[in-house]
Length: 443
Ligand SMILES: [Zn+2]
Image (cartoon, rainbow, N blue to C red; front, side, top):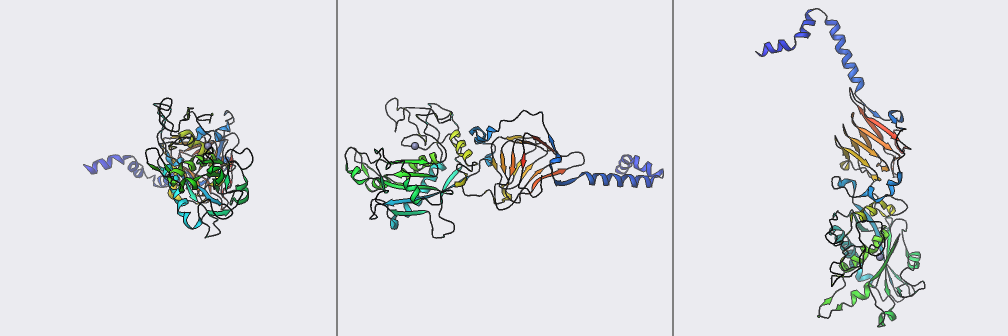
């Protein structure tokens, strides 16, 4: 039976063979092989491979600087990579080395402070406000890391200074010695364009002694520096509550203030009393804790003043992420890991997917656009040195007013590799001004 079937299937070739057209058949088969070998190719794309779509509506490149383009995507968590923000500490003692933490005994305190601030970032909480909200809780994609000068192995990023006029501030002062005083940063700031400098100062001892002055835990955060004020006094003098309990001021307590002030450095505003540009941070009376109405529900957002400061909203996180792509704001404070080619972190746009990147991206490995997938890029995409973008035969890449580059000075990326099959060739469409640069295989 099998034999019969075999004969039946190959009836035509056998017929041809028996008709004596052997030579014709061999030539025919050779031609097919040759053609298919020619059509299945792998090479790097040039501008000639792109179809220019002049009819396309001019794209508003403002998407690069709108937070919506950086909102966390739970289906694609790799689009929001974990970042490390470099910080250091400057503890300013008075001229005699008093009135602040001591070098011999407090380094562990500041290391624990960084750990506690990161522990808070590890467990983002659901927003308390507005009442019965359905605001999503998304992971916080950054942590702090202590950063000394890499050229000096003994530099741990924790510094002690003595200065009689800069060790303290007066929060009531309208002159320069209030919390906004920049002199500490100007005099002692280090690695200013790479690390956020945090200054640990006190209230003046004579202010602390006054019954009308509240030596509170205060702070400020602005651009490349922050100040945490009054920690030493509060740590040294635990508050005894009315019920007899002792309220200790610990690294955990201080880490809430640190996250708040660093929130300012990373681009966030207060949320309870001003329009911070986020729809998910409602205005409210600014209660410190739960109590009688209107404090029956108290905020727990990090950028309010409250006893919790444990919630970052999706908008706040997106705004911070947006800054991480901006050289002029916070990108310079990140540990640069986007210039190390990490193939295990390669990304692919899966078959059938239509993906649009409206915001900037850092790619840590290669990028593959699979068959029947479309990727639209509208902003800046950084590829690490040695990496490439690969387009499968039925892939579509739309470059819309975007820049493909390597935001690195340790080498170029390879370019856009196109795989063509027998019948299909990937499609590259360009709209508006497109820049492909720093590629070894010139576009
Ligand atoms: Zn603030």
